[in-house]
Length: 178
Ligand code: NI
Image (tube, rainbow, N blue to C red):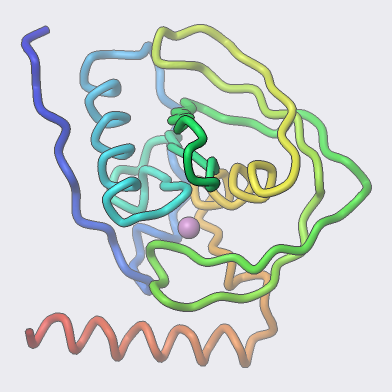
């Protein structure tokens, strides 16, 4: 395959019907899917963010990208998962203040299982399993939620969710005018 430069893609802002869809599993890993993965990493790092799901750039495939390495000086760990699935989760819970690139500048506490085992297909089509804890566990659950049309604000009380949605509608109107 000829070298194709990674390309930043526009991120959809909530509310958008594409962010509410259940995404389709991918079949064999093609060059096209690898290009999608590269573009997702580029888009995520540029934002910057710690995770991105394909529907956030309007692609309704089960693909997520993440890198939760946050400390300065630590090597980045770009991770792309095709058809990721949570195969086990801890009873112990963890609460993090979450945000989302599709809901800019809005943060809220969400409680989720603290530890999860995730199975996915990597960019070579190999099946992989890994245990995630802490921020990684929260992030991977948040991104997999996106593949099922679920946003972190869906965990909030209706009033808070509506308030955030109205702010996003206003933001979209402002951006459309700009
Ligand atoms: Ni998100």
